[in-house]
Image (cartoon, each protein chain N blue to C red):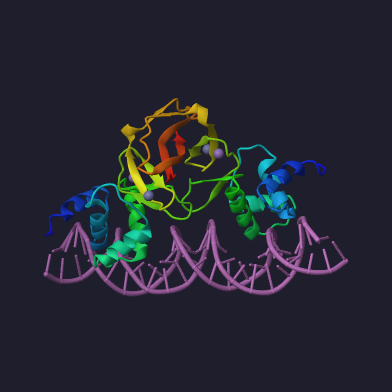
Length: 138
Length: 138
DNA sequence: CCGCTATTTTATAATAATTCTAATTTAGGC
DNA sequence: GCCTAAATTAGAATTATTATAAAATAGCGG
Ligand SMILES: [Mn+2]
Ligand SMILES: [Mn+2]
Ligand SMILES: [Zn+2]
Ligand SMILES: [Zn+2]
């Protein structure tokens, strides 16, 4: 719990041309150094930061989530039409979505086989295929 | 363009235990009687109603979209984390999503084959599998 | 180190989408 | 037609997010 844990985060930020400020480092630490399958909203990440004693404004959390996403460190996933979720897992993968709790669980891409995809219209290409498996009781 | 076109809409509403009010009929007509692959938001449907001279408040458009969804006449799709989209196609199907324009296009389920889905966790079952194929230029 | 400047952070206001509230209107059984 | 429950509505409230503009700071050159 000394300076070391930040080394990884600092490198990620440097590569993305983002100054390793106190706030970005704290958020990067929370996002990337406790497993790589986190699904956060601005609000949940902000609360988490507060609990850790990191003083970061909600505006900065929003800014940082978008900067990290633009830099390819995060990915935004669409599972709620009212709130933005950000995924720390940027590998090719899909999701279980619990309809009761809203909880998201990763599914590595190799566990799903998609065959016979229709091809993209003329002059376009497929940039990504997102699969959400909604699960409910019983 | 006489009373006939409403017959279908009235039946749908009756089956869903929704009184066929002037407002619901006007919205049902817009939603269901011009092809069955419409993707609307409250705002777009409200504008459309205004243009047709149907006087319906935005609050009623929101209420109606949710009532129709609860009744199984519509389906909500998650493609934007800031806005709710409703789909008039309730058959099993998937979507192309244009990253440039946001336009949605239906893909009948039989054109996509999904194999090797992981099974739902204990005591749960899969209620739906949503596939969004994002397309971009080039 | 020191000071300078561009970048970043932040409080706050503004905006966008949606939901709530409570008063008014209306549908449809009697 | 009358009555009542259901539906509609304007407007206020709420929630998520973005914009603004002033204060703080990272990091470079001296
Ligand atoms: Mn994920
Ligand atoms: Mn559709
Ligand atoms: Zn769950
Ligand atoms: Zn398009």
